[in-house]
Every structure is written in C-alpha cells, then in structure tokens.
Image (cartoon, rainbow, N blue to C red; front, side, top):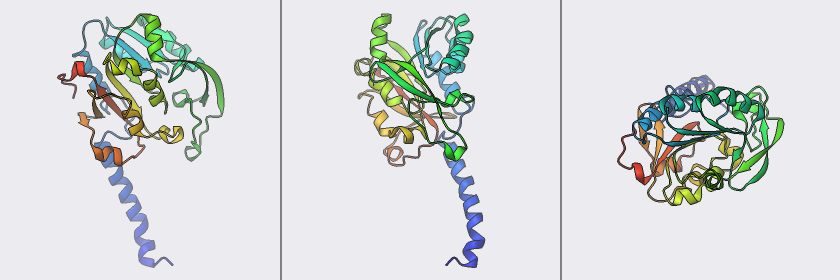
Length: 262
C-alpha cells in the first residue's frame, strides 16, 4: 500500500515537521516553561513599573511559591496573597513565603465555595489539578487524591476587605475558567487590574477551550499572548487555531490601558 518512496521520505518529513513546529510555537511563546525566557519574568518587571507603591497581588495556584517569591522581591511593599491547596506543596510555600510577609492560604479558588477533589502525583505536585488528567502518554498518572477547600475570589476579597486586586496570576492546571467565574463581580467593575493565566493541554482534560476563558473578561480588557520579547495581541486566528500548547496570556484592564507592558 505504501510505496518505497513514501517509506523513505516519511521519517525525514516527520522529523522536519517537528523541528519547524517547535520553532513556530516558540515564536508564539508556546511550550516554553522557563519563566526567565518565556516572557513571564519580563512581564512581571514591566508590571512593577506600572502599579502603585502598595499593590494587592494574588498568586492562585502558587505551588511551592517560586512566582510569589519573585513578586515579593519586585514589590517589597505589596500585599501579596498566595493560594495553594496541596498540603505538601503548601508546607513548602509557607516556609518560603511567610518570612517575606506573604499571606499564605491553603485552599483552591473556583466558581463556587465548598470542597473538591485534588488529583496529584506525590513526586510532581506542580501538575496537581481539580480535573483528572490523562498523562499516560508521558508515563505519569495523577492517581493520588486529597479533599481541598474551595473559595470564590469575590467572597474572599469581601472577607479580607479588599476592593481591588492589582494583579491576579492564575496557574491552576485547567481550572482557570472557574477561578475567573468566581471573580466575575470584580472583573465586571474593573477592580482587577491585570490578570495573567496559563493555558495548555490541561484544558483538554477539563473540557475547556481558550475562548471559554477569554469570554470571562468583560469589554475593556485587552487580551495578549505573552511571548519572550513582550506581548502579542490576540487575533481571531488564535481562537480558531486551538493548539492546547503550553502558553501564558495576560488580560490588561481599563485602568492600565496606556501602560507599556510589552
């Protein structure tokens, strides 16, 4: 059925396509997991030049606290809250961040308050998710579970007496849409200044598309993909070409529409 010519050329074509695809995705900020090169660190530095002297910053899905640790250095006078539901990761986070004055919360954020099951691999807690993930292709399985508390961001801000959140960073392995659903009141009023969130293969397991997350942002928020050299405005093609490749996005609220972030 397959000719000798095809058998000879197919391996080379596959190898070339993988190289070209990897390069193309890198140019769009995809599949770059190192914050030092994928644009995340650059964005955080730009935000530090934009926000006021005492910003309120939320790190949702903080894991062991690496992002919050960087933020605490760049924003020494900030009110910084870090959220992590996994008990082991939270213990490390608390040890790292409490000496820096960061408020640490052992909980998840979502669309509704209550409790949920967190799925995780004890040796790779950074992949923990409120959605059961199919990682068989990577030789992994999130086959451990723990019951965790879930709160709504709007309710939590009310309890903490916080009218605004200047920067909201979300990295919750497919649960980003629900975190934003729980913050809808403040998003609609423009009380959340800048939102950074992750996108990737976890959305397949969660049954969520990129558009589902972007639709949570009211008119007035400017939407961009984070790329190594700055920001790339989203286009209609980005929404059609749903790649599920690891990447990060930022939504910039009306209060910062003239800020130079990238």
